[in-house]
Image 1 (tube, rainbow, N blue to C red):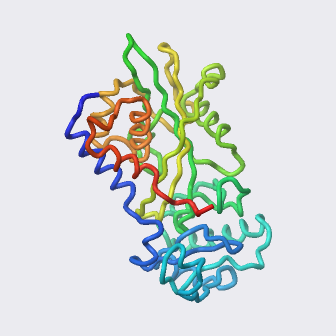
Image 2: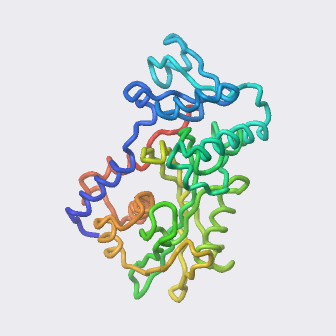
Image 3: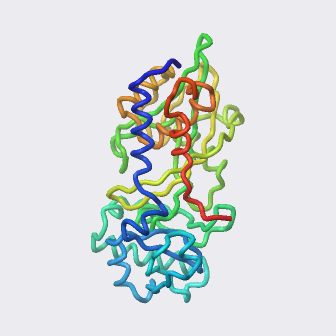
Length: 320
């Protein structure tokens, strides 16, 4: 695609908007506190959440830390407090139940906006994604602890008369987040117990009624990662991205009501929708990643090319 100044400015705004929170620098500048399970740092607590966690001393322990403790210095320099899940919770089941009781109590007291969107769905809490989850936490509560949330996004595309076309969906008006906004053809959070490809196939089948034969073409295409803070809390996220080339006569159909409508757009039309901020922000980022990988966004034409790519892969993972 040819250089478009408005698109370039929209991309710059997008990556800055979706990375409005420094996952590691926040400790020093914003008074945030690290959160640990089994001695592993898995989250970040804002001052307002910290005040509430202190009211559950049988579940969470506040520990004074020394600036000379290298484990803390590695992440945040001069942090003087940390919050630990009490070590008496030894199994994933025990830890899961402890979180559930606290979050249900907070929900009953209407302590936090995020818990008004209770999903009855859990996400695994990981130190590193390659390892088994330490426990499972209600999806709407993850942002209160700054747990890394994982999801899958599928770029559905085809060719018509030699021209690349992309299928995008419009989110249902009843969605608890970003209702009525444009989305990738299929996407969803990585719920507890699901494998990554399994989740991708599930979202394709449920959201767009993709048939088994077409699903054989699902192609893993990497990840994007970012971190932002909004009224729900702190959201470090990693999305597993798939490309799915569908036949020209394929038409997605909503299977579970998550999408109200689907559109087949040219890439130029997609570009205009991104400029107009009609997409859910992380879905727009997935499409930008698609454009980079398919040579539709190039370093000679896009002045912010390297910056944009860097901001699609921010560091939210612990060191190996």
